[in-house]
Picture 1 (cartoon, rainbow, N blue to C red):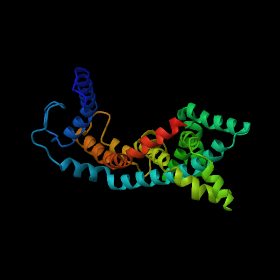
Picture 2: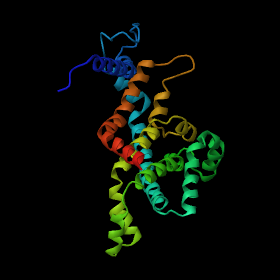
Picture 3: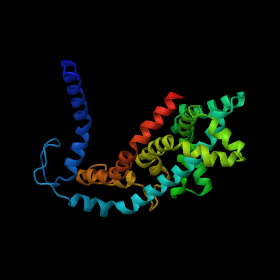
Picture 4: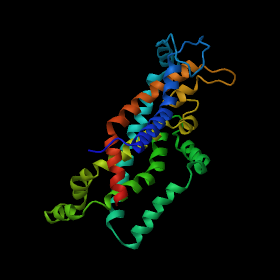
Amino acid sequence: MKRYTARTALLETVMIAAGAVFAFPLYVLVNLSVRRPADPASPVALTMSPTLANYADAWQAAGLGAALANSAIVTLASLVVIVIVSAMAAYPLARVTSRWSRWTFLLFALGLLLPAQLALIPLYQSMRDLGLLGSVWSLVLFYCGLQVPFSVFLYAGFLRAVPAEYEEAAAIDGCTPVRVFFSVVLPLLRPVTGTVAILNAIFIWNDFLTPLLYLSGSAQQTVPVAVFQFVGQYVADWHLVFAGLVISVVPILLIYFLMQKRIIRGFAGGLKG
């Protein structure tokens, strides 16, 4: 049995301190979300007379019900396309060892290096010409193009660590390449699929600039843009801002906690490959 040493105590102290540092912004967020507008106390001070009325006011004033629905539609539709396209693209890139495969993979990797801000104006003009401005489908199209290179990178790294014997056995049994992929390969990709899904979901759900740009002037808004309306040039309803942020964070936070094991497993498989 190992003894409790000074080194163990030091490590526990450091971990507790690190946990407190990361938990402090969450404390401030929840603390201010239940504070009354007339309360002049410091943001760090514990709210002595909390109220839940801020949540109801933020929900109604910002139309968070419709904003949550729009964010959910954009996130789910984008994830379906990203997962299917990325997995199907990564499969031949990971299995074929010819020169064209390596160059194609590098082309996908190049998409990780180019900042999306470089294409903001051309993409905006393209969405305008397609008549998609003000529609949530413009966001789906944008996120699919933006996040596929990153997802292909994760899938390809994971696939290189998966033995090819499963696919060879299925091919011997008479399965076509398409059936091999959907019946054998895709189920094996569940760990990294969880990683791809949650990382992309967090990015899409929390993105502010793209919905502000493509949905500006329309009745359709996502959650970050809906909460932003509480911030004006000269005044801001901070109690409603923080209440709206708590409402927006809860769905994606629950999904992250439910899928955190798959995220770690997917990263471990990719790193091993």
